[in-house]
Image (cartoon, rainbow, N blue to C red):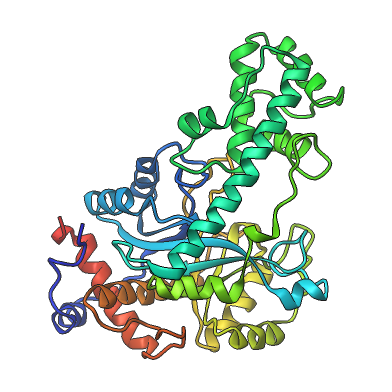
Length: 409
Protein backbone atom coordinates (compact mmCIF):
# COMPACT_ATOMS: atom_id res chain seq x y z
CA UNK A 1 0.00 0.00 0.00
CA UNK A 2 1.62 3.26 -1.18
CA UNK A 3 0.17 5.98 1.01
CA UNK A 4 1.81 8.78 -0.93
CA UNK A 5 1.26 7.82 -4.58
CA UNK A 6 -1.69 10.21 -4.92
CA UNK A 7 0.09 13.17 -3.32
CA UNK A 8 1.19 16.20 -5.34
CA UNK A 9 4.93 17.05 -5.24
CA UNK A 10 6.30 18.95 -2.26
CA UNK A 11 5.96 22.32 -4.01
CA UNK A 12 2.29 21.70 -4.69
CA UNK A 13 1.73 20.60 -1.10
CA UNK A 14 3.36 23.74 0.25
CA UNK A 15 1.24 25.91 -2.03
CA UNK A 16 -1.88 24.21 -0.67
CA UNK A 17 -0.58 24.71 2.87
CA UNK A 18 0.22 28.41 2.33
CA UNK A 19 -3.35 29.00 1.22
CA UNK A 20 -4.77 27.53 4.41
CA UNK A 21 -4.42 28.25 8.12
CA UNK A 22 -1.96 26.31 10.29
CA UNK A 23 -4.27 24.32 12.53
CA UNK A 24 -2.77 22.50 15.51
CA UNK A 25 -4.21 18.99 15.39
CA UNK A 26 -4.49 16.47 18.20
CA UNK A 27 -1.74 13.83 18.14
CA UNK A 28 -0.98 10.58 19.90
CA UNK A 29 2.41 9.40 18.66
CA UNK A 30 3.04 6.48 21.02
CA UNK A 31 0.66 3.63 21.62
CA UNK A 32 1.09 -0.12 21.47
CA UNK A 33 -1.25 -2.45 19.61
CA UNK A 34 -2.09 -6.17 19.80
CA UNK A 35 0.98 -6.81 17.65
CA UNK A 36 3.05 -6.48 20.87
CA UNK A 37 0.80 -5.98 23.91
CA UNK A 38 -1.94 -3.44 24.31
CA UNK A 39 -5.05 -2.34 26.12
CA UNK A 40 -6.73 -2.52 22.70
CA UNK A 41 -8.26 -5.84 21.67
CA UNK A 42 -8.21 -4.88 17.97
CA UNK A 43 -6.41 -2.25 15.91
CA UNK A 44 -9.79 -0.91 14.77
CA UNK A 45 -10.51 0.09 18.38
CA UNK A 46 -7.70 2.65 18.18
CA UNK A 47 -9.24 4.32 15.14
CA UNK A 48 -12.72 4.31 16.64
CA UNK A 49 -11.48 6.01 19.81
CA UNK A 50 -9.46 8.52 17.76
CA UNK A 51 -12.63 9.36 15.83
CA UNK A 52 -14.58 9.92 19.03
CA UNK A 53 -11.82 12.02 20.64
CA UNK A 54 -11.00 14.13 17.57
CA UNK A 55 -7.41 12.92 17.17
CA UNK A 56 -5.98 13.44 13.68
CA UNK A 57 -2.48 11.93 13.88
CA UNK A 58 -1.66 8.50 15.29
CA UNK A 59 1.67 6.77 15.86
CA UNK A 60 1.90 2.99 16.18
CA UNK A 61 4.79 2.05 18.50
CA UNK A 62 5.10 -1.71 19.05
CA UNK A 63 8.07 -3.53 20.57
CA UNK A 64 10.48 -5.12 18.09
CA UNK A 65 7.99 -5.35 15.24
CA UNK A 66 6.60 -3.58 12.19
CA UNK A 67 4.04 -6.33 11.59
CA UNK A 68 1.10 -4.06 12.41
CA UNK A 69 2.01 -1.36 9.88
CA UNK A 70 -0.11 -2.62 6.99
CA UNK A 71 -3.33 -3.02 8.97
CA UNK A 72 -2.67 0.32 10.67
CA UNK A 73 -2.08 2.11 7.35
CA UNK A 74 -5.29 0.77 5.80
CA UNK A 75 -7.40 1.72 8.82
CA UNK A 76 -5.85 5.20 8.98
CA UNK A 77 -6.61 5.80 5.29
CA UNK A 78 -10.19 4.64 5.81
CA UNK A 79 -10.67 6.89 8.86
CA UNK A 80 -8.67 9.86 7.48
CA UNK A 81 -6.13 9.78 10.32
CA UNK A 82 -2.50 10.36 9.44
CA UNK A 83 -0.28 7.37 10.37
CA UNK A 84 3.18 7.67 11.90
CA UNK A 85 5.24 4.46 11.76
CA UNK A 86 7.32 3.88 14.87
CA UNK A 87 9.01 1.03 16.77
CA UNK A 88 10.33 0.46 20.30
CA UNK A 89 13.30 -1.46 21.68
CA UNK A 90 14.77 -2.30 25.06
CA UNK A 91 18.53 -1.84 24.88
CA UNK A 92 21.52 -1.03 27.03
CA UNK A 93 23.70 2.00 27.61
CA UNK A 94 26.83 0.11 28.71
CA UNK A 95 28.54 3.10 30.31
CA UNK A 96 25.50 3.79 32.49
CA UNK A 97 25.12 0.11 33.31
CA UNK A 98 28.71 -0.11 34.48
CA UNK A 99 28.43 2.90 36.80
CA UNK A 100 24.98 1.93 38.13
CA UNK A 101 23.06 4.81 36.52
CA UNK A 102 19.34 4.28 35.98
CA UNK A 103 18.24 5.66 32.61
CA UNK A 104 14.50 5.35 31.78
CA UNK A 105 13.94 2.02 33.49
CA UNK A 106 13.76 2.91 37.20
CA UNK A 107 14.71 -0.61 38.33
CA UNK A 108 17.60 -1.65 36.09
CA UNK A 109 20.78 0.43 35.66
CA UNK A 110 21.69 0.97 32.02
CA UNK A 111 18.46 -0.58 30.73
CA UNK A 112 17.11 1.85 28.15
CA UNK A 113 13.83 1.97 26.29
CA UNK A 114 14.41 3.51 22.88
CA UNK A 115 12.19 4.40 19.93
CA UNK A 116 12.47 4.89 16.20
CA UNK A 117 10.10 7.44 14.66
CA UNK A 118 8.85 7.73 11.09
CA UNK A 119 10.19 4.44 9.72
CA UNK A 120 9.78 3.64 6.03
CA UNK A 121 6.45 2.17 5.00
CA UNK A 122 6.23 -0.40 3.54
CA UNK A 123 9.12 -1.66 5.71
CA UNK A 124 12.35 -2.27 3.79
CA UNK A 125 14.79 -3.26 6.51
CA UNK A 126 17.32 -5.85 5.40
CA UNK A 127 20.86 -7.13 5.85
CA UNK A 128 22.62 -7.13 9.21
CA UNK A 129 20.08 -4.83 10.84
CA UNK A 130 17.18 -7.13 10.00
CA UNK A 131 19.20 -10.07 11.28
CA UNK A 132 19.88 -8.27 14.58
CA UNK A 133 16.22 -7.32 15.00
CA UNK A 134 15.16 -10.90 14.28
CA UNK A 135 17.71 -12.30 16.73
CA UNK A 136 16.85 -9.95 19.60
CA UNK A 137 13.17 -10.73 19.14
CA UNK A 138 13.96 -14.47 19.14
CA UNK A 139 15.92 -14.07 22.40
CA UNK A 140 12.96 -12.26 23.96
CA UNK A 141 10.59 -15.02 22.84
CA UNK A 142 12.95 -17.67 24.22
CA UNK A 143 12.64 -16.08 27.66
CA UNK A 144 8.85 -15.98 27.53
CA UNK A 145 8.69 -19.64 26.47
CA UNK A 146 10.62 -20.69 29.56
CA UNK A 147 8.44 -18.40 31.67
CA UNK A 148 5.30 -20.09 30.30
CA UNK A 149 6.75 -23.51 31.10
CA UNK A 150 7.51 -22.49 34.69
CA UNK A 151 4.09 -20.87 35.09
CA UNK A 152 2.41 -24.01 33.70
CA UNK A 153 4.28 -26.24 36.18
CA UNK A 154 3.35 -23.98 39.07
CA UNK A 155 -0.33 -23.90 38.11
CA UNK A 156 -0.41 -27.67 37.65
CA UNK A 157 0.96 -28.16 41.16
CA UNK A 158 -1.81 -25.95 42.52
CA UNK A 159 -4.49 -27.72 40.46
CA UNK A 160 -3.92 -30.34 37.72
CA UNK A 161 -6.97 -28.95 35.87
CA UNK A 162 -5.04 -25.77 35.07
CA UNK A 163 -3.24 -26.25 31.76
CA UNK A 164 -1.14 -23.53 30.17
CA UNK A 165 1.08 -23.72 27.10
CA UNK A 166 2.98 -21.33 24.87
CA UNK A 167 1.25 -22.19 21.58
CA UNK A 168 -2.23 -21.60 22.96
CA UNK A 169 -1.20 -18.21 24.32
CA UNK A 170 0.44 -17.33 21.00
CA UNK A 171 -2.64 -18.33 18.98
CA UNK A 172 -5.41 -17.07 21.27
CA UNK A 173 -4.04 -13.91 22.77
CA UNK A 174 -1.42 -12.43 20.41
CA UNK A 175 -0.71 -11.35 16.86
CA UNK A 176 2.60 -13.18 16.68
CA UNK A 177 4.57 -12.25 19.81
CA UNK A 178 4.12 -13.50 23.39
CA UNK A 179 5.13 -11.02 26.06
CA UNK A 180 5.03 -11.22 29.83
CA UNK A 181 1.71 -9.40 30.02
CA UNK A 182 0.14 -11.97 27.66
CA UNK A 183 1.04 -14.72 30.14
CA UNK A 184 -0.67 -12.86 32.98
CA UNK A 185 -3.73 -12.31 30.79
CA UNK A 186 -3.87 -15.99 29.81
CA UNK A 187 -3.68 -17.04 33.48
CA UNK A 188 -6.50 -14.67 34.43
CA UNK A 189 -8.73 -15.98 31.64
CA UNK A 190 -7.88 -19.60 32.50
CA UNK A 191 -8.91 -19.06 36.13
CA UNK A 192 -12.17 -17.40 35.07
CA UNK A 193 -12.99 -20.29 32.73
CA UNK A 194 -12.19 -23.03 35.25
CA UNK A 195 -13.75 -21.45 38.34
CA UNK A 196 -17.04 -19.72 37.64
CA UNK A 197 -17.72 -19.24 41.34
CA UNK A 198 -15.94 -16.10 42.53
CA UNK A 199 -15.20 -17.41 46.04
CA UNK A 200 -13.68 -20.62 44.69
CA UNK A 201 -11.66 -18.62 42.14
CA UNK A 202 -10.29 -16.39 44.89
CA UNK A 203 -9.39 -19.42 47.02
CA UNK A 204 -7.57 -21.04 44.09
CA UNK A 205 -5.77 -17.79 43.31
CA UNK A 206 -4.61 -17.49 46.92
CA UNK A 207 -3.26 -21.05 46.72
CA UNK A 208 -1.44 -20.22 43.46
CA UNK A 209 0.05 -17.20 45.25
CA UNK A 210 1.50 -19.53 47.91
CA UNK A 211 -1.35 -18.86 50.35
CA UNK A 212 -0.88 -15.13 49.97
CA UNK A 213 -4.22 -13.33 49.71
CA UNK A 214 -5.10 -11.45 46.56
CA UNK A 215 -5.66 -7.75 47.28
CA UNK A 216 -7.51 -6.76 44.09
CA UNK A 217 -11.07 -6.94 42.82
CA UNK A 218 -11.25 -10.12 40.75
CA UNK A 219 -13.65 -8.36 38.37
CA UNK A 220 -11.02 -5.71 37.59
CA UNK A 221 -9.14 -7.46 34.79
CA UNK A 222 -6.35 -4.89 34.54
CA UNK A 223 -5.58 -4.93 38.28
CA UNK A 224 -5.78 -8.72 38.50
CA UNK A 225 -3.41 -9.21 35.57
CA UNK A 226 -1.02 -6.73 37.14
CA UNK A 227 -1.10 -8.65 40.41
CA UNK A 228 -0.60 -12.03 38.69
CA UNK A 229 2.37 -10.59 36.83
CA UNK A 230 3.85 -9.12 40.00
CA UNK A 231 3.42 -12.25 42.18
CA UNK A 232 4.20 -15.00 39.67
CA UNK A 233 6.33 -13.55 36.87
CA UNK A 234 8.50 -10.86 38.43
CA UNK A 235 11.74 -11.36 40.38
CA UNK A 236 11.13 -13.68 43.32
CA UNK A 237 8.04 -15.23 41.71
CA UNK A 238 7.82 -18.97 40.88
CA UNK A 239 7.73 -18.32 37.11
CA UNK A 240 10.39 -15.60 36.99
CA UNK A 241 13.06 -16.06 34.32
CA UNK A 242 16.10 -13.81 34.32
CA UNK A 243 16.62 -12.04 31.02
CA UNK A 244 19.54 -13.16 28.90
CA UNK A 245 22.01 -10.33 28.14
CA UNK A 246 21.74 -11.33 24.46
CA UNK A 247 18.15 -10.05 24.52
CA UNK A 248 19.47 -6.48 24.78
CA UNK A 249 21.37 -4.68 22.07
CA UNK A 250 23.67 -1.79 22.80
CA UNK A 251 21.86 1.47 22.07
CA UNK A 252 24.34 2.22 19.28
CA UNK A 253 23.14 -0.97 17.55
CA UNK A 254 19.51 -0.02 18.15
CA UNK A 255 20.13 3.39 16.58
CA UNK A 256 21.74 1.75 13.54
CA UNK A 257 18.69 -0.49 13.04
CA UNK A 258 16.36 2.51 13.27
CA UNK A 259 18.38 4.51 10.74
CA UNK A 260 18.58 1.55 8.37
CA UNK A 261 14.79 1.21 8.66
CA UNK A 262 14.45 4.86 7.60
CA UNK A 263 13.55 6.25 11.02
CA UNK A 264 14.56 9.02 13.38
CA UNK A 265 16.25 7.87 16.64
CA UNK A 266 14.20 9.03 19.63
CA UNK A 267 14.80 8.85 23.36
CA UNK A 268 11.59 8.21 25.39
CA UNK A 269 11.76 10.25 28.58
CA UNK A 270 10.59 8.85 31.91
CA UNK A 271 10.78 12.17 33.81
CA UNK A 272 9.15 12.36 37.28
CA UNK A 273 7.58 9.39 39.03
CA UNK A 274 4.51 9.58 41.29
CA UNK A 275 6.71 10.84 44.14
CA UNK A 276 8.43 13.50 42.04
CA UNK A 277 11.69 11.56 41.73
CA UNK A 278 13.91 11.33 38.63
CA UNK A 279 16.46 8.81 37.46
CA UNK A 280 20.07 9.95 37.65
CA UNK A 281 20.28 9.97 33.84
CA UNK A 282 17.41 12.46 33.55
CA UNK A 283 17.66 14.55 36.72
CA UNK A 284 19.84 17.26 35.15
CA UNK A 285 18.52 18.62 31.82
CA UNK A 286 21.81 20.13 30.65
CA UNK A 287 23.66 16.89 31.36
CA UNK A 288 20.94 14.85 29.66
CA UNK A 289 21.14 17.13 26.62
CA UNK A 290 24.91 16.65 26.34
CA UNK A 291 24.60 12.86 26.66
CA UNK A 292 21.89 12.67 24.00
CA UNK A 293 23.91 14.82 21.63
CA UNK A 294 26.89 12.50 22.19
CA UNK A 295 24.64 9.61 21.11
CA UNK A 296 23.47 11.64 18.06
CA UNK A 297 19.90 11.70 19.33
CA UNK A 298 17.89 14.83 18.53
CA UNK A 299 14.33 13.67 19.21
CA UNK A 300 12.44 13.09 22.44
CA UNK A 301 9.12 11.58 23.37
CA UNK A 302 7.16 11.76 26.61
CA UNK A 303 4.15 9.96 28.06
CA UNK A 304 2.70 13.00 29.88
CA UNK A 305 0.07 10.97 31.72
CA UNK A 306 2.74 9.84 34.16
CA UNK A 307 4.24 13.33 34.64
CA UNK A 308 3.17 16.36 36.67
CA UNK A 309 2.77 19.51 34.59
CA UNK A 310 5.17 21.45 36.86
CA UNK A 311 7.95 19.16 35.64
CA UNK A 312 6.67 18.44 32.14
CA UNK A 313 6.43 21.96 30.76
CA UNK A 314 9.87 23.28 31.83
CA UNK A 315 11.45 20.11 30.47
CA UNK A 316 9.71 20.47 27.10
CA UNK A 317 10.57 24.19 26.93
CA UNK A 318 14.25 23.43 27.55
CA UNK A 319 14.54 20.85 24.76
CA UNK A 320 12.24 22.75 22.40
CA UNK A 321 14.65 25.70 22.60
CA UNK A 322 17.50 23.28 21.87
CA UNK A 323 15.78 22.36 18.60
CA UNK A 324 14.71 18.83 19.49
CA UNK A 325 11.80 17.13 17.74
CA UNK A 326 9.34 16.39 20.58
CA UNK A 327 6.22 14.24 20.54
CA UNK A 328 3.80 12.81 23.11
CA UNK A 329 1.79 9.62 23.51
CA UNK A 330 -0.19 7.51 25.95
CA UNK A 331 1.62 4.15 25.58
CA UNK A 332 -1.42 1.91 26.30
CA UNK A 333 1.01 -0.91 27.14
CA UNK A 334 -1.03 -2.23 30.09
CA UNK A 335 -4.47 -3.89 30.27
CA UNK A 336 -6.08 -0.61 31.41
CA UNK A 337 -8.06 1.06 28.61
CA UNK A 338 -7.62 4.81 29.06
CA UNK A 339 -8.54 7.61 26.63
CA UNK A 340 -6.24 8.24 23.65
CA UNK A 341 -6.16 11.98 24.29
CA UNK A 342 -2.79 12.95 25.74
CA UNK A 343 -2.80 14.85 29.03
CA UNK A 344 -0.42 15.25 31.96
CA UNK A 345 -1.01 13.51 35.28
CA UNK A 346 -2.74 16.56 36.72
CA UNK A 347 -4.06 18.63 33.81
CA UNK A 348 -4.87 18.78 30.09
CA UNK A 349 -2.03 19.87 27.81
CA UNK A 350 -1.95 23.64 27.33
CA UNK A 351 -1.77 25.37 23.93
CA UNK A 352 2.03 25.49 23.96
CA UNK A 353 2.44 21.76 24.64
CA UNK A 354 -0.19 20.89 22.02
CA UNK A 355 1.65 23.00 19.47
CA UNK A 356 5.02 21.38 20.28
CA UNK A 357 3.40 17.94 19.94
CA UNK A 358 1.88 18.77 16.56
CA UNK A 359 5.10 20.37 15.25
CA UNK A 360 6.97 17.18 16.14
CA UNK A 361 4.36 15.09 14.33
CA UNK A 362 4.68 17.35 11.28
CA UNK A 363 8.45 16.82 11.13
CA UNK A 364 7.98 13.05 11.24
CA UNK A 365 5.19 13.18 8.64
CA UNK A 366 7.41 15.19 6.26
CA UNK A 367 10.28 12.78 6.90
CA UNK A 368 8.10 9.80 5.96
CA UNK A 369 6.71 11.53 2.88
CA UNK A 370 10.07 12.65 1.46
CA UNK A 371 11.73 9.28 2.07
CA UNK A 372 8.84 7.60 0.25
CA UNK A 373 9.82 9.75 -2.74
CA UNK A 374 13.44 8.61 -2.55
CA UNK A 375 14.63 11.86 -1.00
CA UNK A 376 16.51 12.51 2.22
CA UNK A 377 14.36 12.97 5.31
CA UNK A 378 14.90 15.04 8.43
CA UNK A 379 18.08 13.18 9.42
CA UNK A 380 20.89 11.70 7.35
CA UNK A 381 22.23 8.14 7.49
CA UNK A 382 24.14 9.03 10.67
CA UNK A 383 21.06 10.42 12.42
CA UNK A 384 22.16 14.07 12.16
CA UNK A 385 19.44 16.61 11.28
CA UNK A 386 20.24 17.96 7.84
CA UNK A 387 17.03 19.81 7.11
CA UNK A 388 15.49 22.95 8.54
CA UNK A 389 12.84 22.15 11.13
CA UNK A 390 10.54 25.05 10.15
CA UNK A 391 10.46 23.82 6.56
CA UNK A 392 9.68 20.30 7.72
CA UNK A 393 6.90 21.56 9.97
CA UNK A 394 5.31 23.34 6.99
CA UNK A 395 5.74 20.33 4.70
CA UNK A 396 4.48 17.91 7.31
CA UNK A 397 1.46 20.06 8.03
CA UNK A 398 0.64 20.03 4.31
CA UNK A 399 1.08 16.24 4.15
CA UNK A 400 -1.20 15.72 7.15
CA UNK A 401 -3.79 18.18 5.82
CA UNK A 402 -3.87 16.49 2.42
CA UNK A 403 -4.16 13.00 3.88
CA UNK A 404 -6.83 13.81 6.47
CA UNK A 405 -8.92 15.65 3.87
CA UNK A 406 -9.80 12.27 2.39
CA UNK A 407 -7.98 12.75 -0.90
CA UNK A 408 -5.95 9.59 -0.27
CA UNK A 409 -8.00 6.43 -0.72
